[in-house]
Length: 431
Image (tube, rainbow, N blue to C red):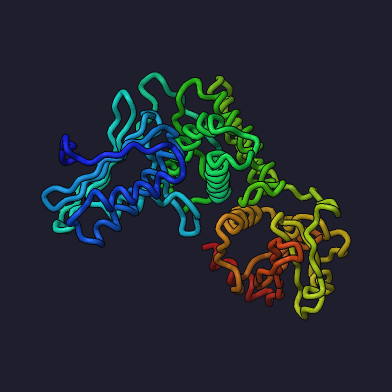
């Protein structure tokens, strides 16, 4: 911090509940008389982010201090948990959460965190008249103390699938926190359950992000992650909590969609590796696990009228938000060599070449979490898998529709590409 907190600085105690972010904004407006409206608005926005983080991640009483002095606005947010430090995450453009600390970094003149025996203080300052000066952020994310950590080696991590699993865990934990805090519903876990595992989840995500940032173009990496000694049981508990929340998502208790089988398999492998290696066992590489035989039972299938798919002149396949195939037309049957009854209820991955499946699962997971996808409505050249094991180059175009019971349905048109053009373009894309 650039200045000590004056004894006369206005302060307010806030409980760890959702309305505290709103109360904090009002308190700031009352406490900054004479400060211009734009600066007050930015201070309210950033304070709301920090108070929300304290509510979600610390779960203790919060003390908010704010004052203006010498043309600068100072805000301090104190909570009683010193071990849960703010961890900025590198987020892709389509990520739905994780941007709060980055916003604090970009909009403030200076920001950081200070730890004391009784908790921590996350702070920021606005310097409206000193636009050329900006010390930047001083977030502190220490690793395990010397002698207290174990290096966990994760071998052959698929980057896209890992990021998809990371975002899905974050979405489940965030929504579960809000629901449990509201007291209006239960999702099978308590606030204490989430708090017990959230620290390890944040630490793991941060370590993975740092490791991946060293080689941002790689599709597969072997990573070394420093983890605190003795946290193996917490890793297994994190896996259990996510499984419970995934079940709540599948039963419709959450807005977040349940994970695809590959995302769940990767998450279970990664957390098992952490637990096993902390227990002294050697690393085991990720070998990829794709669910091709999990045919959806008729009673679980999305209510969808296949007339639109059958009416299309080009090969077309419809699938729901569980990645299960709902309909195929005759042109798609002729193109891919399958009988319709062999595909209905199967997962879309059955017609995707193995080397493209993890990329598909990662992109599909991001679509479920954000509602955004780079290929929706566009024509993209990809290979499709024929029943005999060969591949067929197709121009893929995806439309988004809705089923009778409100589920998302994606209709993919697979227009065959001329073999020489298709192979040339695929080679160019791969290079």
